[in-house]
Amino acid sequence: MELNFIDIHTHTTKSRDNLIQIVNLDLGQPYPEQGYYSYGIHPWALDNADFQVDEALNKLKENLQQPQVIALGEAGLDKFHADFEQQIRLFERQIVLSENMKKPMILHEVKSHNEIVTLRKKHRAKQPWIVHGFNGTAQDARQLIGQGIYLSAGESLLHPERKIYKSFKFIDLDYLFLETDMAEIGVEKVYEAAAKLLGTDIVTLQKQIFTNFARLFGRETRGREALH
Image 1 (spheres, rainbow, N blue to C red):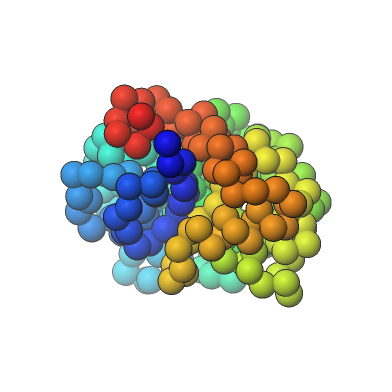
Image 2 (tube, rainbow, N blue to C red; image 1 turned 60 degrees about the vertical axis):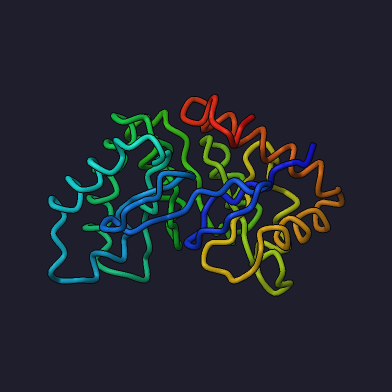
C-alpha cells in the first residue's frame, strides 16, 4: 500500500491520493466539503488599523465548529509586525478558544520562542501546538519541544544557509512535521531533503510523521478516508 505524505501546513490545495494536507484559509474563505483545513487570526492582521478583533474572533469560533476544520491557525507572535502587546492579547484569546474547542494550534512564530513557552505555561495549555516554518537553532528546538510543542519544517531544508539546515538533525522525531507553506514545490521535495539530513529513507519518515499526525488529529479524522 502506498504511504501518505503529510503536509501539515499549506496555502494551496493539491489533489492527490497519497497526500494529506491541512490547508490554511482566510477567515472569509469557504472550505470545500473534502479535506482538512485550519482557520486562525494571523498576528499580521493587527497591522491593519481597521481590523476588528472581536468580529474576527466570533467568525473564527464559527468556522472552528465545522468538522473539516481540524486546527486553529495561523495564530502566534511576530516581533517584526504590529504592536507586540496587542499580539499577545490576541494570541491569548485564541489559546482560550483552542482549549475550549479542543483544536490544536498551528503557530506563526518569529523571534518569540520565550514568549510562546511562557504563554503555554501560563494557560496550562493541553491542546497540541505546532510551530510552522521552524527555522531556529538546536537550542530553540529543545526549548519548544521541552514544553510539548511540535515543530514543522519546510522549504528551508533545501537551503544550507538556513539555521534549520544545521539544527534539523537535533529535532526529536516524535515532535516533527513537514510542510510546504506557500512554496511552489511538492511536499515530496521537503521529505527528500529531510530524509537526507537525517540519514534515513523517505518511507521511514512518512511512517513517523503519519504516526505524529494520528496522535494529534486521530479523534477528528478517525474513520475518514485519509486515515484508512
